[in-house]
Image (cartoon, rainbow, N blue to C red; front, side, top):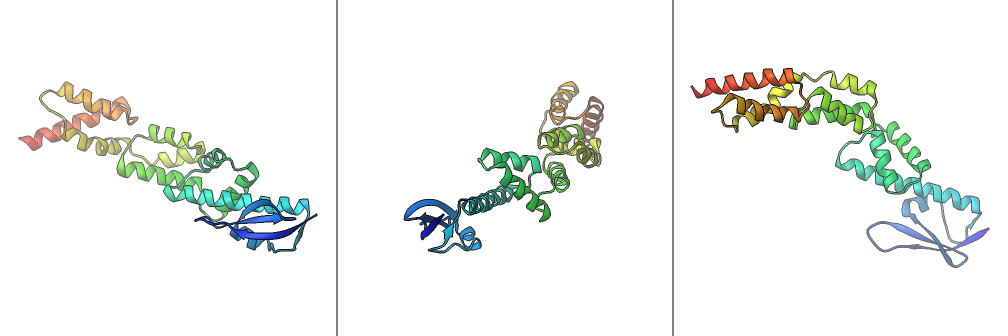
Length: 211
């Protein structure tokens, strides 16, 4: 059993505390973990107790890292897990953090999938197929993917995706117009049939406007 002989706040933006056991530096903790664990000078710690404190600190650091990642954009559960693994956090801490964040509603694959679909639909419309592929890469389940992408109307999405692009294409030749706009839509995952209908519709609309 070792005794805490000093608790020293580290300088810097991140609030951490250096813990000294028997006059030697032992480890550092998040400041709020030191408070939460009730650490104080002259307190004696068993090896088991030190492990418990380390586990609490890993959880806190992992939670803070996950919260920071989520400030940039929502994430699927598998995506967030992989990000935390890349940062070197232990599986046990990651499991605890993800469980807590799901309870808090901060991690929810249904909500994430809806966000992803709506974001794509608003800023860069694409097909059901391509949206599903993107969600698969994020680790979203097939059940959720099927439900979410099933609400995408491919013809409407293709029209909205191609409308601005079509206005910037030369229209001296339909075949050239079709090839360039068709390639654009194909990269967004639309089928041949949808591309055919969409390109014809936009060509006719632009021809009418120019009359």
